[in-house]
Length: 313
Image 1 (cartoon, rainbow, N blue to C red):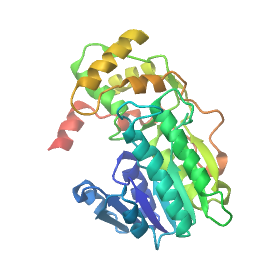
Image 2: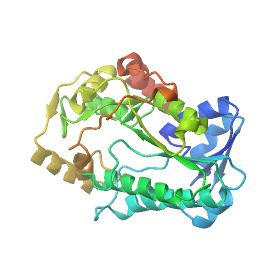
Image 3: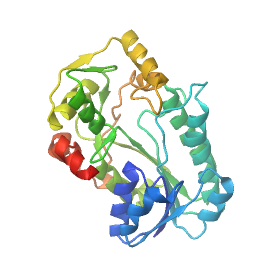
């Protein structure tokens, strides 16, 4: 199968590319900067090229000749707006809409889109509302008969080697004696990245996955505070976790938003944490995935100080 992967140079994309290339699929990986994807050229069936996927003309040029398209592009932060900021609209709504309609035009058999657990046009955060509107746009694009099919994947928070979730808390634990956390009581069902990409690989060719939506989660539910504590211990720096009151957590988030670069946590992140990030039903057995317990791979997922330094050399 010839597959176009948008966002293939990111955390989840790198694991997916490795799996699909090993299975013999021919992959096209556009990226804003070629340097971001050069290390993926070790996969013999992968082609990395520099392209602006937010340009409609570029999408029209990339799609022909492919059997499937996978969209992994997503962001966690945007300027504020109603119902969401411009960056969320551009990445989570306009891009999937553009790609979905292009898939229909070019007769692409399957469009696989990575959404998020809890995505809803009426969600409590800009992130979840934009993800929900992106899903709505995709469904609308494929309403016509014979327009191909789509599959929506809704993972909970994804963890694994080089993630920016558990490893972020592991790094913070190295420097701080205590870890103050907003939304510490929020419940989530983290999924191992290899389980997610296995589910995505299965959904590419599974007849039952046509026009289907899957919640992809791990086997256990944790609070955010519990996950922070586990990550700190796995990094070799056990730390007490302090659950911040909501008002203080929002002050902390506003401070982080004023700093250069992406904030450690934003007010919109806190809004997302007001609803549980937990599946409404078990992981579909038709995907052929047995969810991996977090504890079974935690030592491999969270890097200790020495491992980080060796990677830096």
